[in-house]
Amino acid sequence: MSSLVASVVAQPAGSSARSRCAGRVTWLALLILLAAAGAGAWWLRNDEDAWHRVVELWPGSTWRRYDALIAEVATRRGVDPALVKAVAWRESRFRAGMTGTAGERGLMQVSEGAAGEWARAEKVATFVPTDLFDPKTNLEAGTWYLARALRRWSAKDDPLPFALAEYNAGRTNVNRWAERARGRQPRKSAAGAEVSGPELEAAIDFPSTRQYVVSIRRRMDFYRARGGR
Image (cartoon, rainbow, N blue to C red; front, side):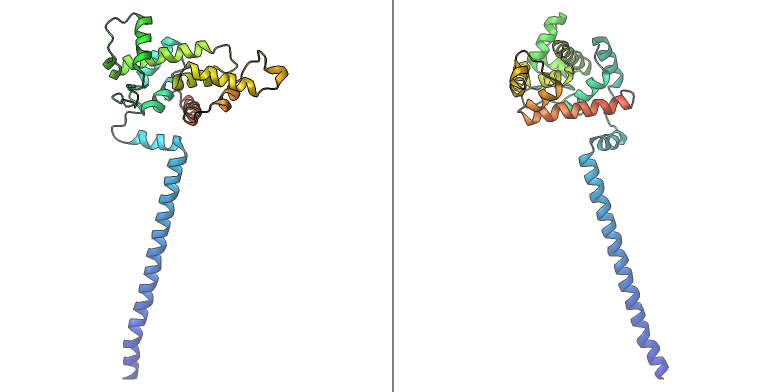
């Protein structure tokens, strides 16, 4: 009888131990999943390239839809297609129907004023601002404006920061930042001294424009490494 009682008593104890062990395993698995999710979220948040690769795999993603059109327009304008694609990525994440807070439209978020300059220069008599929602028209106007900015600063050691800052904040601000950078140079070299790309970036006092230049350069390098895609 005593052995039977011992058996009955021992059975719940063993079952309880197994239950506690299973509970520990469940909590450990949950902690591992939470840690993995946190690491994944940090990775996606801090590595734009990683996020890009994830988005490209999403069904219906538009992130490669305009590659052929970008290559065609950029090559005709003498601009690196990787740069044009990087600007479109930064401006709209390739959403052709996007409208900005100041009325900018389309893939490269072209303003009505900039588009008007393009239309007059290219003699596009039928242009109306809503045409900027057409991907080809938008890329034509935006790439024309970007190419003009690159030509304007072509004498610089690195024209790209100047051109991107102009695309984002206008030529007046770029001239102001260039003067600001020149003023930071040693007095004996400041008069008539050329401002380098890094010096201009350091002088930009709009945090959003400074980040704009940095992020587009990184994105352009990413596309170049993948053959412009």
